[in-house]
Length: 141
Image (cartoon, rainbow, N blue to C red):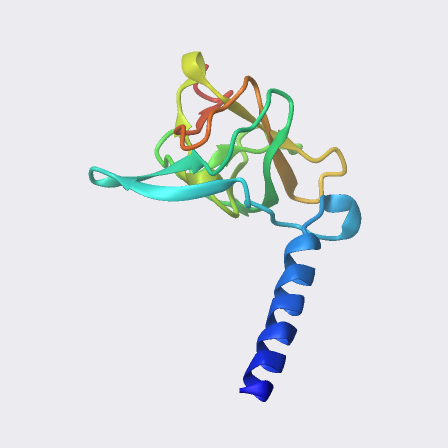
């Protein structure tokens, strides 16, 4: 019993350290979607807020992979700013499951200024916990 309690204390301590280390790009973490989860809705998947998120706050951050596809024919990619005007990318985390609704958007994907393939999603308005996340997709507006 004593060794079991000791082992449990070590696991709790390790878990606490890992949870507290979530941080923005400045600390080297590339993907953080801790405020978002994905659920099934009918025959598709949707991203939802795991907690209340205030306007202007970061919803999630991640990295993208540039893909040789036409975003007008593939809903799982987003326009990505490069020297080519028709570049499309797929994002990490939950961003690929956001619903694109320009008129009802709750969030906006913002590419990193250093063109390193990183992005963050910012809340355009207050988002309630468990609310479906909708993305302002500039390619559709």
